[in-house]
Length: 213
Ligand code: ZN
Image (cartoon, rainbow, N blue to C red):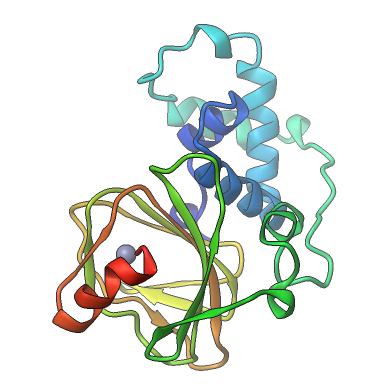
């Protein structure tokens, strides 16, 4: 897992401070369950910034070089248990979805792609599980806002990079893309968006309101 596939320090800080919306918080918690490096980073963020969190302005930027220096310090290695076990969906996500992937009520989205929308208390940010058949691409689309996609099974190819279990792909309004599931297995992922997607072709655009995409 390379650095850009992780949840960044600023998101971890917001998560630690409890200031994320519910859907994004679920994505960060799920990433943490699958990623020892990010668990360690969160431990550091909480340790170092814990006392200051209440006084940090909302738009403050975390100094990445400071964080990097702390992470590379061996004395700060924390013992945090892994939680994924033999389930496809790690604990926080399994609880929210109401079971593991085989227990859920998947709904067809077209093209073999299926989804399970996840209920959250806020209406602005949406979370859904997606299942994309092996080798199949998602219709190409742009974004009205922020999109984070966390891979849970299979692999996902997006903008010349591969993403594996635990990896997160981020997109924003500047990105138009057509992610593709890897050839070896169906790709199951958690997608969080804070604005509707902008599909470029007509059929997905027509279906969009039906599925709340
Ligand atoms: Zn996208």
